[in-house]
Length: 127
Image 1 (spheres, rainbow, N blue to C red):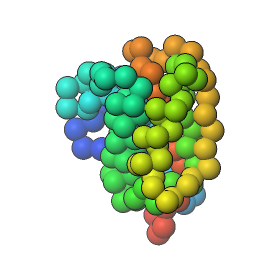
Image 2: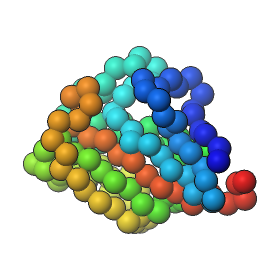
Image 3: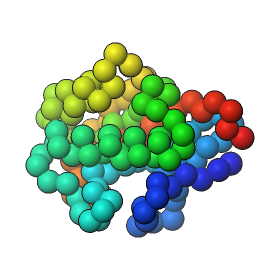
């Protein structure tokens, strides 16, 4: 098992942003946090979905993977009413690549976030 943490990131809890095990990268739920300032991104569900996906991508890059390696995502939304905005951002982020996905209406999320996204990606030649 190998833990992954993008350079400059700190976590507020006892977890790793990513863990590689048996050829898979497990990306912990990513909130729409700006890791330079530590602040939650403002601007509504679409802006927060974009920020959460950028954070997913930062963990992918730190592990040496790309968006195309993602095989599964779990998207938590504070209110299912945000779904159309979030889905549009998600579709633009992944383009033609279509990982398996679950959408979970979760109610209140940590720090008042509207969106949180976790993912699993395939890794090649990582021990």
